[in-house]
Length: 265
Image 1 (cartoon, one colour):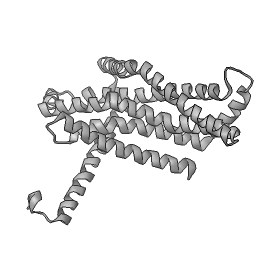
Image 2 (cartoon, helix red, strand yellow):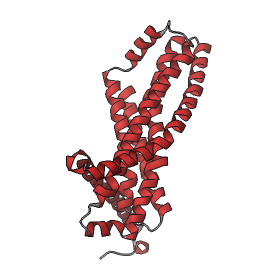
Image 3 (cartoon, rainbow, N blue to C red):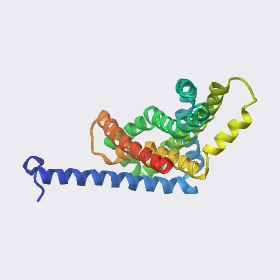
């Protein structure tokens, strides 16, 4: 017999909360696996579905493209100036460029792009799905023979993945250009040395870790808000957003810690 939470002793209450926490994560993983299979299936890309996915891609990416580029450029300029000035003061100029590439492109850009897309797109999408779920819209679609995961969740998930990949790629290119300009100025004489430095930084292990980290960041900011919206029994849009944020930040920290250990451990 299930006792009310107030009648449980602290150990039993902690065990129940831990079991609910594990169950919540398991449901998110299950929904993510289902959406992943749908994304890889050609049957998910009919004419109407392609149009809906393209619409979400444009709505999720176009409005933030300029603002994210400007914001990431400003952050890269500030960090680059600090790193170069510090390296000059300690006589470590030869290491400044390599440090810039590692800090900006490998560590900062993927996380910044993921957080930007999460706050701007996927967390609000998760709240929208939560409202549809609570109002019974998803159940009504299922009763009419329409798969709500394919119709409502998949377009938002694909658009979020595309947005993170595009913003990370664009910001990475901008960061590498700004790192060169801050270090050497508007000249071409150092291009050969700069290319060798970048190639030395991006060895095979770093490239694989960088790609996997960007992929897992994108999956996290897409699947956690949408999965939480479909699995959490909540009546409040604010509650859905907060719960999704807590889970999302915890997963992002875990991914970042694993990538740091893989790159520098």
